[in-house]
Image (cartoon, rainbow, N blue to C red; front, side):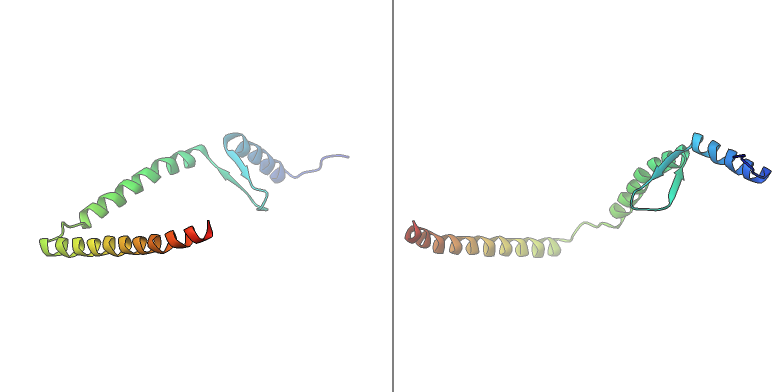
Length: 105
């Protein structure tokens, strides 16, 4: 069998081999397509992620405001009521559980 290719096909095969040599070849069993990711793209992505995180954190801190005394008291009361309700609920569950546990054991 003779390998009959046009010059365009030879160039395409050569370019493909060079692309494979200079890139990381990734493929997945669940996907039928393959992707080529260059090292510079991976490095750029590696650098961009922390930069985006820092920018988001700075924007969050800029938007944050210190609560007024009225807001602070209101939030403190709500938290105290929540603690009291959860404590009472736990107390009553334990109060009911002790006699039932004694009956079963």
